[in-house]
Image 1 (tube, rainbow, N blue to C red):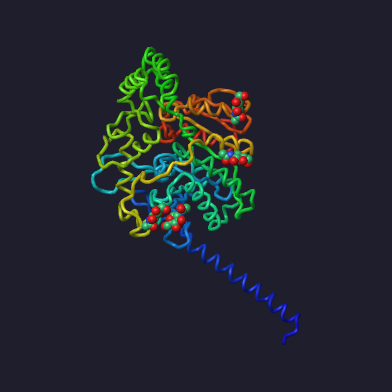
Image 2: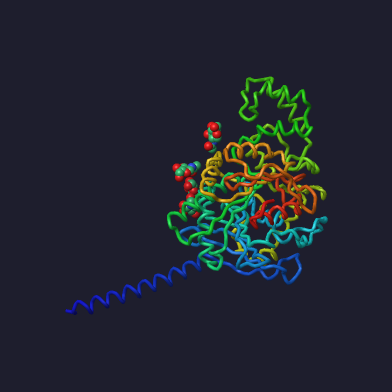
Length: 469
Ligand SMILES: *[C@@H]1O[C@H](CO)[C@@H](O)[C@H](O)[C@H]1NC(C)=O
Ligand SMILES: *[C@@H]1O[C@H](CO)[C@@H](O)[C@H](O)[C@H]1NC(C)=O
Ligand SMILES: *[C@@H]1O[C@H](CO)[C@@H](O)[C@H](O)[C@H]1NC(C)=O
Ligand SMILES: *[C@@H]1O[C@H](CO)[C@@H](O)[C@H](O)[C@H]1NC(C)=O
């Protein structure tokens, strides 16, 4: 029989060994789960790349092929050690974050020229937000872009999107510990106005509960965000203010529908008749940017819910849009993203997805109907936020955004005034005591950085640097 002290120290030694073993196992597991590689060549773009791009997968399930989240990571072109880190989600739900990268804020975009069967070309975007911060563009919910899962139907809903984004982020940071101390922000637009405030709250709660690694969360920014799902009620006053419908029709709509244009009583014939006239007036207006060309294959603002509207707009049709249409670049994107050479360059796992679609819309469960309360909670916690509105978007008109911001009841600390880009008015802004800044982007549409890159870059530069717009 061994003497107790020896036994004790032997036991102690075993514990240390075991801990070490578990620790290395954990590192090993992390490495199996997270997979990332540098992208050396981007087909269609200059070589060598003038920025650092990494792509990879983060596994969220029990086994390797359960749930795999794909991302593009562009390092800040300035000082990645010091600059903020941002996670970007495109709307949809289900539109690939590659849309945000290539059409809005990333370092390259498609050269718009007629598709001739060869690989579409890419060119630099001088107003890339990666000049100021590192950005993770993530394909979520599962099934979006290059992300995949064994059972998609079980994994696509608002709440799952929230949890998955949170898990993704913590796992990503475990694999990129050098970014743990950087200030962290989330940015998104359109439909992501629903999940993003919830994600920010989850991250914040996770930090408070001591979940590791701790995230240096500072705030969030949202562009033309769906928030209360009552946005459609503001489309009518908006259309009137913009001169798209007559005074008489507007008055009649107000009288007959009493301001409620979403849940219309099917017996209210007067209201229905007025809405019909409204639809006719708007039927050839491009609702995502009322100044832009109307393109046949894209949305019409019918008597559908906003969700259906967003669904339809982003569906990847096979028809070829006109070259001058906004949607032509979406068409080029789909051609590019389905090319074998591109898959190889981006380190896409073979056979994991079928055709790449810009927006994957199937089987998504809408569970969160309003994100207002989450904004209210985040305001109390003191996170910074920037809420901007391309003022020529009719899908989420600036009036609806201003209405919910006003309803937060915070006092104004910097009142309505123009903000400038090169001496010209870029839009108007107002800042509230909850550290929330609202800004319009003058002459811009639903995805503002796509239409007005200079203005949005100037706005983002100021905001991310903690300066007034
Ligand atoms: C996602 O699907 C997998 C099966 O592939 C299932 O085991 C898992 O529970 C689902 N995840 C969620 C969050 O529902
Ligand atoms: C996928 O998940 C759904 C919902 O949880 C379930 O009904 C279905 O049986 C699952 N399918 C497979 C192939 O596991
Ligand atoms: C807001 O915060 C309160 C207090 O922490 C919490 O009880 C409530 O559920 C939160 N609201 C939402 C919508 O999560
Ligand atoms: C804002 O003030 C109004 C009127 O006093 C009140 O009804 C509402 O609950 C307040 N909203 C919030 C988010 O506190």
